[in-house]
Image 1 (cartoon, helix red, strand yellow):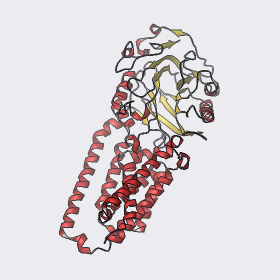
Image 2 (cartoon, helix red, strand yellow):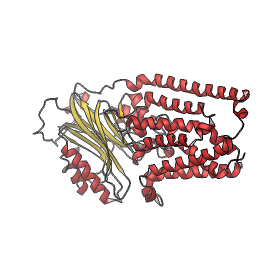
Image 3 (cartoon, rainbow, N blue to C red):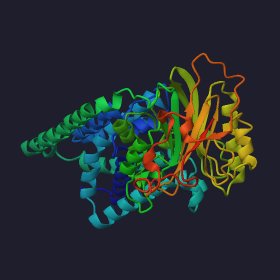
Image 4 (cartoon, one colour):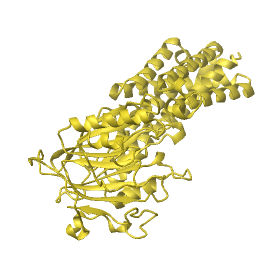
Length: 503
């Protein structure tokens, strides 16, 4: 019996979009449910293995068309979709697993229904609907830059709802054409043999997935070691990496890893870092950086929070972290991570933030005011690394540093606009600006600080702005020499041509 081609096409487009957007990488579901430290959800390793298992389990029972195409079963899948869209932590992750299992069960039925329809118009309509969903999936965060963007501003739930409704139309079309088939068509020896072989392939893939997790687990769980614990140093940096793509749109993660390694940073903020979207490849490059170079990683606000992303890697244990969606009434949604780190036995707060566009002065003012409030209310030593979009000593600059009780790492550096580093309660050692090389259009800014002893009183602390020569400090305090002169791989000290050191 021929299936209704329009519902089947909608179901096919919705299925393809759901699998592509949520299950093309085993880490996506975990990152959707991530909400900071103490760990509120699963890490990609090893819990990505559960995502592979859920999909394989669903595919394994997909021959049960009577179950897969039922209204009750669609309700279970919709409940899972609602959980992963609206709830953080392990409950949200469990909802994602339920959604994956559901998608696995309906894949066979929807594809068989599509096979019974006129191929040209069915596949054309299905792919058209898939692409509409992909655009909506982008519009929810890129609303400021696209026509009609405000209609979908921060409405991921609407895209998920449209996906589930299209899946409902697909499974109902499949039910009308498949459930009524004779039992012999499902239970013939040939059909059973093919199902057995397919299940074998699925579960071999599961075993391979868990084996890969086991191989990666030691790297993902080893304890990072700071670079200079004897000197109580913390080296902090900020870099806008534009989704791990270089200016020719090639992947840049290998070069990012090399730059981070050579800079010997203890804490680094990455801005525009959320790549767990279709247009960014659905990949978690921050996990690779953390595993290869041995860092703790906070992915930052999840992809369902509608930001371009800000992430943080740290050699120091992350005691707690909070993800902030900064006030953005007009333009794109700005994000920030406020983390408390255990730095040589003392709590030190760090902010990684990305403010909005130059074209939205109200947004930038409100965002800067909120960042200043967070820093002002903290009693811990503090390091700020962020993208502020202001000239030095302009109004928003003063809101950030004066309102936040912070100090600019170098108030004499007038050649800044986007990225800034600030500090309070730690002893500034040095400051460097490193060219971007072939990666992105934004430099790396790095600051070195010495952290007070755990019981040292910092209430009367005041910064010194007297510059000194590099020889003033022992070699352990120096910035890497590899970036002097022409540097390496296009990275070199620029603007000042060398690091600056302070008393």
